[in-house]
Each structure stands twice: as C-alpha cells, then as structure tokens.
Image (cartoon, rainbow, N blue to C red):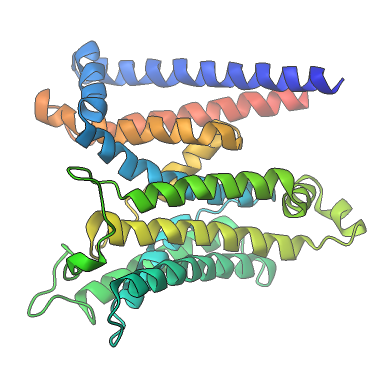
Length: 347
C-alpha cells in the first residue's frame, strides 16, 4: 500500500513537472512570437547567455545560491500553511545586519568580521521573520499583509541608511554605500562571480533543511500543525509556537542570502539588494510542490533564465523587461498547476 502511494506521488510529480515545462515553454514561445522575436533564436540566446562559458555559469550560480536559500526557508513556513511574503524584507534586513557588523570599528581580523556578519545576518533575517509571525499570532494580522508591510519598512530603512548615515563620503546615490575593502570580499575562483563559501552554505542549508523537515520531530510537528492545527493541540503541540519557529527559520535563511549579496556579489549595500529573489523563490517552491528534491533544479532553471535573458536586448534588440514578462507567465503556470492539484485533492 505504501509503495502504491509512493508510486502515485511520483506519477503525479512527474505529471506536474511535465505539464509545467510544457506550459512555461509554450507561454514563453507565445510571448516571444507576439513581440516579433525569432523564437528559436531567443531560446538559443537565453541558453548561450547562461551556459556558454564558465563565467556565465558562475553568474547563474550567483543567482541560484540566494534563490535556493530563500526557497529552503519558505519550505518551513509552507509546512505550517504560512505565506511568508515578507521574505524580501528578511533578505534586506539580513544584508543590513551583515553590513552593520562589517562596519563595527576596532575589529582587525577580516575573518572575524565576516564571521560576525554571517551570524548577524541570520539574526537580522530571523528577527524580521519573527515580527511577521508576532503580527499574526499576537495581533491577528494576516501574514501576507504583515509581510508586505514589513517589506516596505525594510526597503525604506535601507534607503535611509544609503542616503543617510552610511552614505559615501561627500555623495549619496542609488549606487549604494562605499565598497567594502577587498579583505572583506568572500573569495571567488579566478574569473567567477560565485563565492565558493556561498556554494558550500547553500548546499549545507539544503541538507539541513531536508534533515529537519523529513527526519526530525520539528518537521513532524510542523506537518501536524499545517495539516490540522486544532488536532495538533490535542497532542500538546502549540500551533503559535511552530508558526513563530518556522517563520524565524525562514527569515534566517533569507538573511543568509542577504549576507552573500553583500559580501560575495555587490560588496556594498545597494537599494535593490534583495534583487527580487524572495518573490522568485515563492514561485520556485510552488512549482516544486513543496518538494525539496526538486528545488535545486527549478532554482537552476529560473537562475539561468534570469541570467540568460540579459542576452536578448543585447543580441536581438529586445526589451530587457521581456525576462520579467516570461517569469510572470511562469507564475500563471504555477497557479494553474496549483489549481489542478486542489481539484485533484477534492475529487
């Protein structure tokens, strides 16, 4: 019976992935056709823009890393049926806390500064996630509205820092704060934009998330709360506590993404430090059907699309916003597949 259920689940997952791939490719081809772009040439350029050289592949990985960190974090909140829309703000606060640690005077060792930035980014993202959880559990504010509100606050806060206390000497601009010293950049292989430490962190977070969600009491209790909060109370499992735990862990994962954006990618704090990876991670998790084993592959797909689409305006003279349109189509595909799943469960 168990094997049959597993076979059915595998069959359904394969169907969802196949359907999703067909829809995404079909929508993308349709959009390209409507805009007058040569469809095959556009697909070819997206591929070449993402994988034509080791440098481009490293750019794909530099997007994949924060994307997978956010996606892993979102798995915790989806387990308890929380929509952590505030994950964008959690990336920003992780970046701000990391930057604050890197600016602390009196610490000579660059390694110690980076380690402190790593820890404080976890703290910053976790606290921002916890705030959204407290708004829901103590204030009765739906997590979507609470998260969106906190995103605006975080965005306003980072702008205030860039144009105020942390502005560059004599100038304040949208280009961000002053560059960090070279000693505070995470090291990258020659010619790559991806920090080796970032890749290690991302893979570690995937493994830890799998262990916690699939092999621990925490994962079991999160699942119980998500499936039936009232029944969970009968087993002395407090839904509120697990709401707060899950969203704090998600925030910490997003905070790590903020840390890597500062120390491995931009080497400064910029207004768009989150780069929309939080929202993109929501789409990745939805398309993956909350299955952690699918996250790395779907995150790689969207990372390659994100990087490869840069070629379109350069080579084919297409508008640079086209990649955003394609990703929007992917959102529609995800929602469509979710609708099919719900109807399947109801039947």
